[in-house]
Length: 155
Length: 163
Image 1 (tube, rainbow over the protein chains, first blue to last red):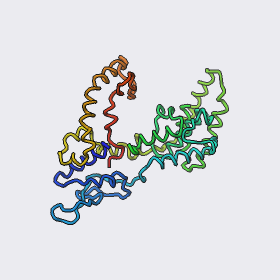
Image 2: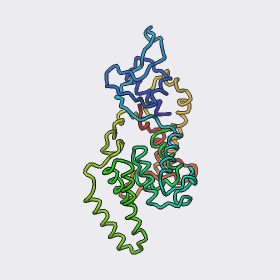
Image 3: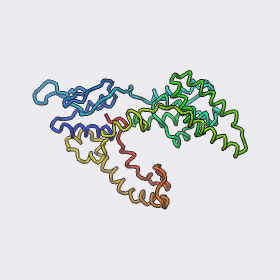
Image 4: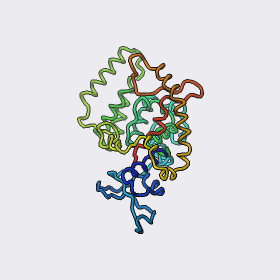
């Protein structure tokens, strides 16, 4: 929440004369797949607010270089992807797998297996998980929470 | 166990296709599993050292680095858009009225932070080693009803992708 508010603040510093629009926040929060070159009047999204300077439509600009990015993550998609990767692992029985099943106690896996699973998660989501925090992730639920924490999904 | 990470990362740089990487990772794993019941610690450390040297000589010249990792393509790319939270105090009231529920509670949060700050500093001073801290990891809250040290920075941290 604070970060979304801060984003508005960045825009307010960039264009102090324009009024900001509240409904744009949801649009800007998702990663825009288009690539924009940084120009002084680059428009990232359209503003439904009218009435500024008597014109019918004014777009609020975002002074920020935009790059192509992946679709935004949600908790459900993270969970589905984690379970999918775990089901592909041959040492895990897919029927016995649940979000709360502990790797070592319920599924009977090794510490080396846990390292392999964490590496597979790193490859799936495309970012590194440091060793110190990786050795604490012992259930799929914890992995989902960790990824959601790192990627700011539903904060 | 810590050596499997770089070895598997190496295999994944050499074999970007998932199925070939899986094959070589399984071969590596089989080599580890042959010797996993070694009870003699001296022999085990010698094998570990030999494994590390083998990794060093055979490592990939351009290993794949994730975009957000140091040395990757988007490392610190969005750092300039991550605004600290004290900026919110400089907002105009008309802008603050756009988020009434947040700003109505913000003063209470700040008061809470003022109250818990002394206790956090005291805990950190008590728990830091004499030569200075060794890691960046912060200790958790030790007493009942206490907040973890430097919690404000974590709670009001900017998003990973601020735009």
